Length: 123
Image (cartoon, rainbow, N blue to C red; front, top):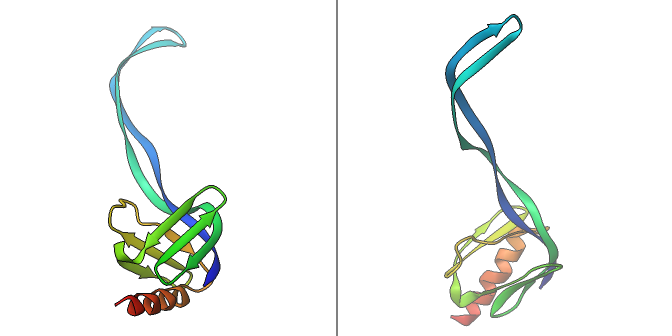
């Protein structure tokens, strides 16, 4: 099975939140001098999925392979731990990978059914 797919990556939006304290001294009319300190930190404000690459997702009898313009990913079924299925995407949890790859496809359940049929034949 060969399907057009898009590799998605999770992007974390952050912003700098700060506070300050101190005093202002008036030197002359219209001129003041401020002393004090400022503290801040980066805070996560949201997460979103963005397109990382586009290409084709191949589902074979032993593995799933994504070949994109910039990246290629191979998922052998022997290393597949879990498969998250969405209406328009699939996410592979693979042993040895920290971030599970997610692919946007036309039909997530169709890809999952093909992978399920292939893994049942292996057993």
